[in-house]
Image (cartoon, rainbow, N blue to C red; front, side, top):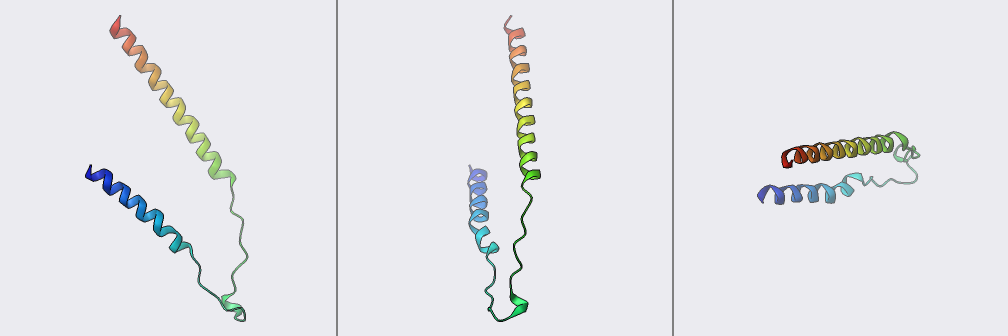
Length: 78
């Protein structure tokens, strides 16, 4: 029970503190050194494809383990 509460608190602290780290500093419009860079587009393909592939592989593994368990139970019951 203690591990579960600790885990939930750690996740909550990380989730709530993330927006504070992502906030930028204010800049004055006349100072060219503090002008923000134009945003750079982040690639979207690689991460999503990796997540989908790992999800499919995980699903196949779980189904395989389920079928093996059913076969073993069938052999033991017969």
